[in-house]
Every structure is written in C-alpha cells, then in structure tokens.
Amino acid sequence: MWGGRKLGSSGSWFLSVLGPGGRSTQATRPLISSAVYVKNQLSWTLQIKPGVFNEYRTMWFKSYRMTFSYLNRIKNFRYPWAKLYSTSQTTVDSGEVKTFLALAHKWWDEQGVYGPLHSMNDLRVPFIRDNLLKTIPNHQPGKPLSGMKILDVGCGGGLLTEPLGRLGASVIGIDPVDENIKTARCHKSFDPVLDKRIEYRVCSLEEIVEETTETFDAVVASEVVEHVIDLETFLQCCCQVLKPGGSLFITTINKTQLSYALGIVFSEQIAGIVPKGTHTWEKFVSPETLESILESNGLSVQRVVGMLYNPFSGYWHWSENTSLNYVAHAVKSRVQEHPMSAEFVLKRETEELQATACTNPAVHEELKK
Figure 1 (cartoon, rainbow, N blue to C red):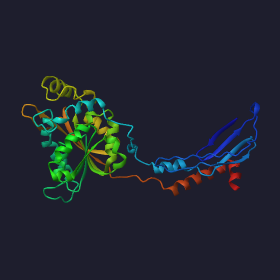
Figure 2 (figure 1 turned 45 degrees about the vertical axis):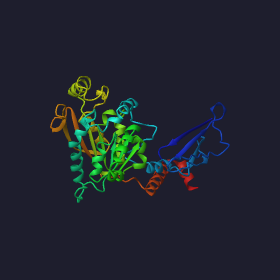
Figure 3 (figure 1 turned 90 degrees about the vertical axis):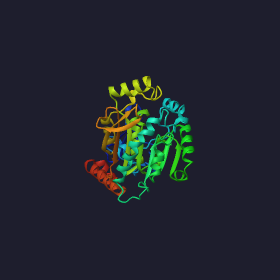
C-alpha cells in the first residue's frame, strides 16, 4: 500500500510503502508524476525522483520542479473581480428575452411603450457626455467624444447607442435578442456617419469578455441590471472590459416599496405605461447594494443621482430622491498590482526548501547528493 504526505510548503514529499501486515517495505519502482494543464495556461510538469529510506522506513522524494502552482498563479493573476467568465455562464434571463422579443419592432416608436426611454435620453446622454469630458483634456467641437470607445450593454434598438455615436464615439452595442439587433442595424443604416461609428452584435456581455478585456473607455448599462439573473457576475464582467480609469454608467430602479407601487402596480397594471411583466421587483437594486458590489470589483462610485418620470408630460427630470429611478457613475481604479516574477518565485521556493533541509536530516543528506 502506498501512502504519501507533503512536508510543509517546501515541495518535498514523503511516501510510506507498507507491505502485508502494515510492515514497511522497499518501493520496487521510482515514482514519476507528470501533468499538463492546457487551455491558455502555463504548461507544467511535476517530476519526482526516489530518495532513500530513513530510520523510520519512510521513503522520501524530492521534486525536481514544484513551482508549477506558483507559475500557474502568475499566469492567472488577476484581482478577485477579474475572473473571466465562459460562454457557458450567462446573466441573460430567457424569460426577459421573450418579453423584449415581442416588442422588438416598437423601439423607434416615440409614442409607444419605449417612449419613456426616448425621453430619458434628455438626461442620460448629457450625464454620460459631461462625465466623460472630464477625462478628455481636448475635445473636438461637435464631436466631443471622438476617440472614445464605448460599449452599450443591452442596447435594444439602439436608442442610446445612436446619440453616443453622434457625439463622435466609437460604439459597440450588444444585445442577446436577435430581433433587437436587426432593428438597431436597420435604423442606423439610414445615417452613413453612424454606420461607420456603430457596430451591433447579437451576444451577451459574458460572451465577449475574453476578447474585449480592458478595451473600452466607458461601459453603459441603461435599464439593464434590473433584468439580469446574476447581478454580481454582470458587474464583474463590466469591470473586466473597462480600461483602468474607464467609466461605468448605470441607470436602473431602486428596490423600495415606492418603486413597487409606482414602477409595477401603477406603471404596468394600472396605467399601462409599460407592458405587464416587464419588471420583477425582486431584481430591483438599491444604490447601496449597487455601490457595494461595484466597490468590491475595483470601481469607485463617483455620483448617484435620482431621476423622476412624469407620465402626464412624458418628461424626466433630476431629483435628489433616489427611491425610484437613479443613475450611477463609477470609475475603474487605475492602480494595478504587479504579480510576482518567476525568478522571485523560484528563489523563494529554493529558500523554503533549504529551510526545510535545516530541520530535517534526511532532506539535508539528499540535497548533498
């Protein structure tokens, strides 16, 4: 029977070889173990050579290379929020997709169900523009956001994507609903300027994380977070695609009794401002919860401002009250922690092995060999 244990963190292993009746016996073959970890990781090999029995009839082995765990960590070093999500994971709610699929042809009807979103542009577009201009020392008149790359997540029919493109930004709009993207592409095709500045893709945020890591100067998620099924994962992905110093803009609905009464009971069930089932109160998020998640993912919240919609006039206005709708602006930290160099890791492991040798005679004797 073979039994093994590791000594401390030195990378040395001890193997007890027990014969019949539990008596120690000599190993008949050397132990060599190897493994290869593919998929964009550092390849590593663990090789172990036999040593000698000590007085306790325990065979010990010294590893030729035990730095794979450290090297693998170097390759994969990221902040806690920088885990990349595969396409097998998604924050898209299939039920929400069906709801918006049925409304895909109504995006550009300013008098229809998306009328409030058209009107919201009067607030959210200047809010995004003015906060981004603080990061641009010089900007072109008429195209203040020229040179900036923006990701519009859950772009729908492009109601917010197009105004950002007209300000000079290069914008990628993504949405998991194919019919939404068809509507958006069709509408922008009427403007040759927008046709060059805007690109639309049918996909979720998680599906483009790896190819767009630290790509965008700004990410916009307007009226989106209250529809995802995994808010934390969604916000982590938003952080990953942002450049250090980049801005995240979110508009959403607070989770309060007032938002339930007005946002769901009145707006959906009584006044019919939006179709029934458009919102789920349990998915609403408070500014405090949103800020906590953003801060834990390396984003610093700069501003949170309330917005109120007047269903009779059809206009929005700013408010100090955030109990209903609100907009948040957060900035990704520019500070990047540098991972350990391979040389430093190897040196540290060697020192650990030598320290173990000083306290274990068997290890010390083998090192001499």
